[in-house]
Image (tube, rainbow, N blue to C red):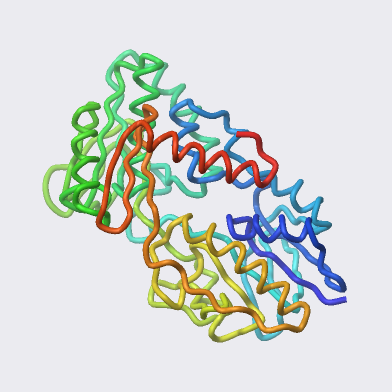
Length: 371
């Protein structure tokens, strides 16, 4: 019997599992490798921090999805891929041969060039580790009577949403001694977004009392402060690092074709350009048409990946896919208010938050989670 291995439990693979549960692959043994039994939906994480959702409503149960699809589940981390012999190795010592491999492991925090990130700060990814650590940070803050300084390093969408979510939670729960500072390398937050949306975000940060430090590039994180290329250090009691995406180190070592940043180069069918028996989607992939690292594209790739894996397994040609050039970005701002952008256009309001909430809940319901 031939074997399909799904390496990683990302958003695209969630769709693959749902399709396999609906219609199993005949003549194929399917395995899922993931370090966690659940997949936290990144779009709802700020809502959990803000207190809008319980964590159970933000999590897709991979173990249940795999069981429904009759897929063998391995709770471990992929450590390497050997395309020459069609085998993956895992951190627990497991080795799995494959006839077809799909990789959707997501990305890692881009912290290799920032000494002290792991020792003195908390990267936002892996999300599961952040979820585990967050209650302890809250307890540490509440145990102090004096001012508690929280610094969020990185002002992309994830960093901005996290700052707003924590500010709202602080207001609701009375954390009056908490001071939040958001630090970014650009002149405005949400680098890469339309100017109007970036200005909206900056104005809201000021209104909510979140300090904004612009055009600052960190070079080192020490025990209680961040050093920058220019200017004075910034002290903190806790620091979250949300500074972009990096590829897992084993990807380049595997011999798979990668882009300059080490992400797997895939063609329009989502197959590796160097090894067609290997597919990749989500943040670990470098698409033929360059796109930002965003859950939007991982979700959109899911149905295409599911169809193409089935096509190859059944001896048919996979279909080509070109990711949309524009995506709708919805940025929550803590208090059931959100700002949206589509291309150069941007707008905001409570209705945008309810729109986002409806999209997020609908996504979770498709995979058996009642949000």
